[in-house]
Image (cartoon, rainbow, N blue to C red; front, side, top):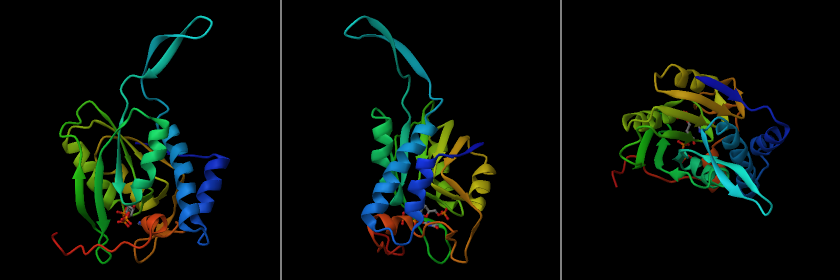
Length: 216
Ligand code: PRP
Ligand code: URA
């Protein structure tokens, strides 16, 4: 797995806004959207293109377009904030959805939504989530897309912690590349990334209130 830690002044500035505890929901959403577009731009760098003829007002030029746009799969809630920026970069991408929330005691993901095409064989999947902490949520997402036949998976996260990166690296799933804005060194006793940015879902949308024990 190739790991790309994007080193760019504009990406670093947006990440800093997101890390700052004083940043409110509105500014956090804005910075996350900007950073999301930058990371997806980088993640798309070697997507295959095909040539076609395009008429300019003057003559015929050789145009290029994506040969096979990827399917974007956000892990919600926090991944929701990355859909619009991803689509702004790749307007013809398809979007699938996975919903899961970490159990606060066990830190294991508890899935509550799976809305993906049945067959992902031959497709490139961009699995996107702002946070990669223990890696439990992402590994669950990887299992679901790999089970459907995805053979080329690109993971886009904003803040990745070393344990999560290692978990993905050792997972055996066909992850071609991880694109991230930072790799933070560790997790605290609640499995939050240190220094991280706190709870990305809460900072985007406010506190979550799902009863994970309620089967409804
Ligand atoms: C966050 C984040 C990831 C997960 C990362 O979601 O968006 O999905 O935690 O942690 P992990 O690598 O240890 O699994 P959370 O479960 O807090 O749900 P939310 O997006 O609804 O807030
Ligand atoms: N999920 C988050 O939103 N933040 C963390 O630091 C870890 C998991």
